[in-house]
Length: 374
Image (cartoon, rainbow, N blue to C red; front, side, top):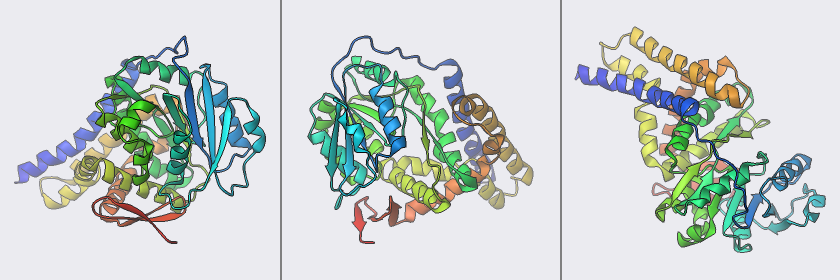
């Protein structure tokens, strides 16, 4: 029994770290280069649900209009009663502006997505978060992937940045640990999910799978959209271009609410990941097992944590440093991030409610989500 515990402990330590190193290898030596498409493949509708079109959002919408791809229609969808919208921007000839009430909908974002989807006809449709600014050639690169008829979904990995110590700890799992895994998927030319910051799909395939109405019953539209694509037998591609999503300005409580909602979404859409996150946590499992088995000394725990930190430093140096502001503190905080992640996953497993954009939701054991009165 003692030998089995030791083997299990080493598997927990090595599995996560070897995955990390595989992602680093993919990033350094196997990264795909995608050339922009030379001729328009068809009209692209970019649906952009917004929460107020202030000056900063106007700049980000301008970046979409300045894309190399020529045949673009931008649909901006705001909420009824939104008083922060800059209406000057909607006078562009290829920009449509829609207003919809989100009352009664599970997700305001999905309500807006579905509303615009029903009122446009383009075969290629992209969804863009309101706080994302994209490079000028990204659309032409992404739409080129649809030259393969088996590809029905394309998205980009996204690095989330957060303020404060709580934000830095949250980033360890929500962002930095995700990046090596994303580059493995990029290298394999296939992913199981979409990344919601900026994602592109074939309308005919999504309609075949039941349409975007299917997203209304999910806590994560990108995860569910990916499952819709896969349900039809089509493939999802992940681009090598990394986008930056900033959560700066959010309080520690808001960051933890975001973290909690994301883990519940993972539980509902990919329950197998919850299993690996609990039973193969590279920091927590060695700590727990060292209290069970006398053969696992303090030295083993120190070794496990040291391996975790060293590999995090190496991967962060080569990957994060090229994409965003780099600090060695982020790498040193990785074991603390593991502990927080373990707690948040356990909380999500047993949680019956979650807060999302100021709205309280109940979550049943079978995954049914319902908005509660607040």
